[in-house]
Length: 409
Image (cartoon, rainbow, N blue to C red; front, side, top):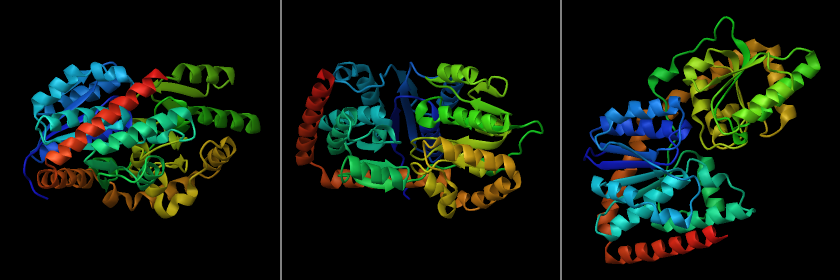
């Protein structure tokens, strides 16, 4: 890969969870490789834990870390509220503008298109990280978001998918990509492949992740309750994370009489949280390529997970161990089996850990994405002239019209 330095700006709405972990690792690796890197994210989102991660990244970025208020939903009104964001990006003079998630991707591609129309040949790159691809195409909201994705696809030079599942979802819900694509798995550092041993007084189970129904904490709580109904004793468990549905889960714990068995911790570093319990449970209803699965496997922790998103790609030939998403009965049985045979859980964890390091590496992730940038910069100068700028302007007008229609509904 050529080492020609580039000016790279990453844009994301919410600086939390796996999506920001991906950006942080990528930005650090790119900066270490000699590129000038900047990050832009929302100023209204994030707990104290999340904000500290953001601030720890700031000194490593030669193009800085800027925070602007960004609403979750994409509306026509957003277009008139992005002047400060556009001005900031314009002044950075990026070679590559990389949007992450639905909202970050929209900002990056719309602003990147305006910059291109004004003579800056910036490469517009987008990684969905699940995002709008999780929406049901048979429902109105899904149709709107998928229409917008289809139009924004015309303003996209490069697409990065974090799993084969994500690429297939894009093709089935949005259509065949018009941009150059690259499938790049999320990566871990070598430090994360060191074994983590549970504490001597470890609980039975750990849920770690965002506290929202998409990730399945309600299913985890119901399974604990089902085991108590069958055995008369509730397994001890920890819930680590933050999110919009936390208060509802706390009330659910109390109403089911599990408050003495379950402890909430807020957000914690994953490897610290892994010490709290004998088995990690990830009962997600939807995922793209979840870092928490990678981290648990790399740390050698016994794991129960669902067959969603890119998780089967992590498990490979062991994918038969995964359980059906949203099926409380099968989740309960899997947790009962973990209680009954902890030695098998440890043996399974050791088997799964063996082949992870070569495929899910931060260095490989950074190399593949940065190579895509370099390819795009070469293609841009050769193939996009005045005709390309005319197409950009027409696509931008179509996007504005679609945004107006969706906001009026």
